[in-house]
Length: 423
Length: 157
Image (cartoon, rainbow over the protein chains, first blue to last red):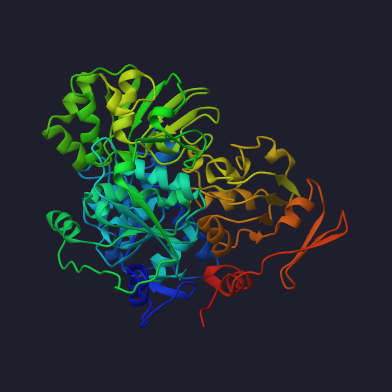
């Protein structure tokens, strides 16, 4: 069995499972946020009317709650959702609620790794499509809707069809100017936005072994854009060290068997990789940065679970140090812990000196919510994950997706820029 | 039948991100398909179907997408394929039927055609054109959840 089959076999109490088997998997950790939380509350209200008991959760200690999409609240509906969420966690005895304005908080997927909320080998479900991110820790991490999350919170299990696994092998360490974001954009460009539909996307090979945990998180994060059920990297000592540093205990490293089966193998050479952008209006619409359209950018956005981890901010700082931005640029660290490290290590000063606006952790404009959404005809380069029409604001705005290195280099020139071409 | 002859209709156009904070189903319905077809709300009728190409509902896990369509009156979406989360949200929440079709139905059915779907015999009848097409049968678990009326009413064997 491969790692996903092993995790799902264990979670469903079977000796082994095969792709296409339908199982009910026991869930180890579950997460909702300020969009899916109120969505679950609405489902609970419906269930109550149908006479289904919603008095107790299956295990409040395994549930955690994030506030990220619409915080800090820009208007009253968002503010009311936060109050609803607060009452929900209080009433059901959920202790792990990361509240804005009260210490550590941030984008749910970022909290999942920054706070070691999920461990290797676990089944982790979240009410957000980018839950796939956390598969980089060696967990089966999958996004679900409100009804499914309500079912999980009440029953502690959920049905899955065991996925087939696509294996993406990266040979050799990525060059300095290329980031994990470039690799995942290249992969999505090749397989398309439905290329991973219903399947697992697993990453391995010497290039992945050489990668930091944070880079692997970027890869798994955007498996969602290929439609994948989950993304995963077999956990190694780096993952164990990363989680231990953040307070995790009892880590067991689960791996696939030597004779594990994969439905398809894709292979990439690091030495051939180049910075990539995805042009409007799809993550699969890719171009090498040096061949990208010569458009006048209005804005650069460095944020989200995809592109505002500490390593992403470090990459941006490397470019912005001693330079000034030519277009509006926002940097929103994805969690308070990252914000704090950026402050302690001088990154915030570099950003502010460059003219950047540094904002609080939030999903913000990535999903067109607030904090810098785009006007009609505005063109943005962004470290986020999607560029469908209207994703970041007006339906006639345009978003180019890139790595933090490219977004920062482009902020300096006002054009889509390969970091190697900066003066 | 409302036909969108394109692939990859994503959740950001089905219900734009700014409405994710809204949990009033009737209000969500007024914004359905806003990112692609601003006239949708005025033309959709109770019991309507949508016909589209590959990878319908790709993108986010927002259950707002099937909710907004369902509360607009849409009973089924017929598409060449579906993104996984949209598909399971539609079924588990019992909002609408995601019907996988083949190219003959995609090409054969036009905007405004009257359609009858029989999920027992896996047949789609085009009453306007007097044609019949096959739909892909639901997998066993999906069929059972649909029959039960959603995940909460489904009793695993």
